[in-house]
Image (cartoon, rainbow, N blue to C red):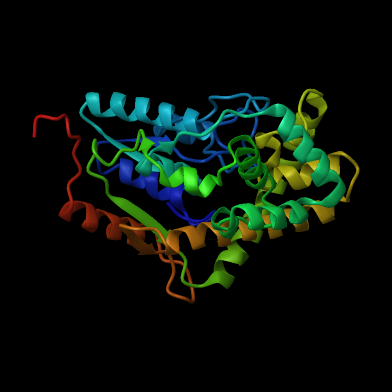
Length: 317
């Protein structure tokens, strides 16, 4: 686990060279085909040598739920352990990690009429206005969300309107499907010490993606004609801002600036999650002045793993 641009993928690939592991993607953007450059998806050469499961499994038109991820991840983990290897889950979608560990509370299915009503209200009033509404009906959920995190605000209000019960209350009720009873779990959190260094790295990476053709990638998605801004794939950080450029709502420079800002905000949310994450071993990625070498970070992880072997519990002891 770790914030965006912290080096998670490089570390996972390095670990695979030393341990009998198979990689499982935990990034809500990389599950989508055609979202390659902007999601920092490993390239074809890297995937050939270090395959990642749950990459390129859905079309950008699809809605991929947390329940879908839980089922897919559990299936892949069972397949890996059956082959005598260790699943290594890597990514920055913290909600997915939480669901994997704790399971998924019973939630109502999507009600598209209610969603449409919420989207219409948001278009008129803005998502911060609906966020204030969420603060009134479900303050616990609101505390975990940013006022512009439209997708999750919409879902929380939708659940409340359907059930009359705050999502935070439903989430504290009995959950199903968590991994705690099936696996011995070792958790690593890559943590930057210097926020300014991370911000600089994020900006550099975003401009690198632009040079690699990120804008052209989003333009190709826009030209498909069947995608729209309310789809989870298009709401992904970077894609949402460049979509506005494609729609003529801003200049390319403005889209890039907004994309960098949105990515930094994403990293801040991820770090907040990790600061409060139980049972995670924090691995520093910098010393406050510069980033540690990949080998140094790898050695920290390997030392911890040697002291805490991981195995699959097949129920036979």
